[in-house]
Image (tube, rainbow, N blue to C red):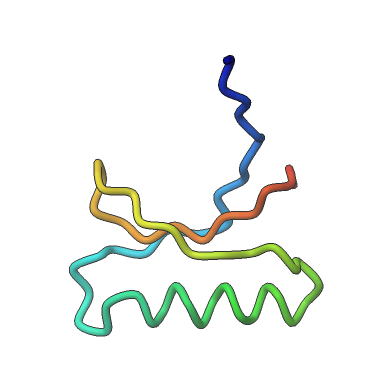
Length: 59
């Protein structure tokens, strides 16, 4: 079975080592959802140690 990948857009990046952890990323994602980007969510990029706010749609 072939894997299907969706296009994702990184809206913003936040360092994982920040004192507040993922909170800034979560707050940013919530603000994006309030502005109409309903699928904005936070994921962790282990390779770069960053929290990414992404959307499944292209911007």
